[in-house]
Image (cartoon, rainbow over all chains, first blue to last red; front, side):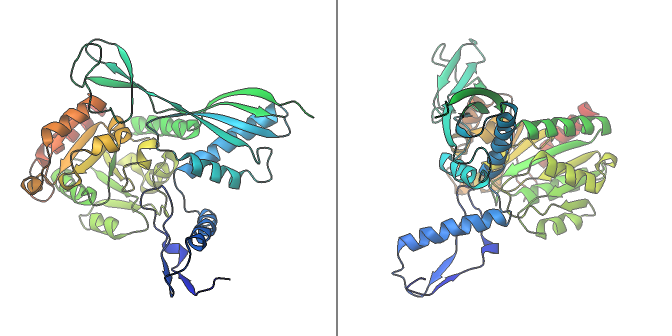
Length: 172
Length: 221
């Protein structure tokens, strides 16, 4: 029980603004309500959110990971999946923490329950339209650098950085 | 203790959606229905751009609209008032549309009898970029007040779009928006992208955008 009365504005009105996390609209009769309580509430709300079919893009991605992994678990007749290695392009806005969180939630009572997700980030590679050289650049450099090989101003096409790939799994 | 073994998986996580999108595109080619996936931040002017575009083209093409704005029927009503068939997808908080949702909308409206269908994606520059909707072309709208640095913040969206509409150019003087810098950033991310400057409010540049659609639909059918 909370020491102070907290009013939770209906979960149905949870708005997803940025996809990063569900926003909770709370109004407390006492402003000293600790941060911890707010965080606990948020976690609880997340689960409700999932049950209510509120989705963020990490969720369908995680569902897909689980179904592919369970298919491979069955095919290889393993009893428990210990870890899963993903390769995700640097350009993909996937929050590692949320993927793991969703995975833990979705994988309960399956052979993949408790598996740890290891995420390898695949760098952004661009190819220069002038000299044809392929260069690795950071996400931040995108849209702001010239070709390091020939100096041509912005004539790149993307070679890699958008991957959503399951590389391997460890299992018993 | 059982030994931990390593198994190769080597599968694309989004392959189901990619496959659904491929099948949908095949169907659209057979039906000769040109589908444009329209993406932007909330408030960039998707609905206003649509309304202007519809009034420019509705005498030449049979147009339909799929609306996916989160739990709102306002936009669909605005579109229906123009006499155009609009279907509202209840996305229930979904942050993006995927191919199966778009297919549901297209099937619901009987898309095979349409020349052109606009899919108004959820207003957001992150998630819609990750999922192939099965549309023939991806178009994004960036409005002047949002700033010219958006390509640096949301590069993926810019790499996946075929056309960039710079909307609200009538507000240019009120901001320090640098069109040249924006175009440079866009070219560095996606040199095949067509950039068209418009103002859905005053109608400026809508003719160029309509011409782009006319020629794309002609090439498609």
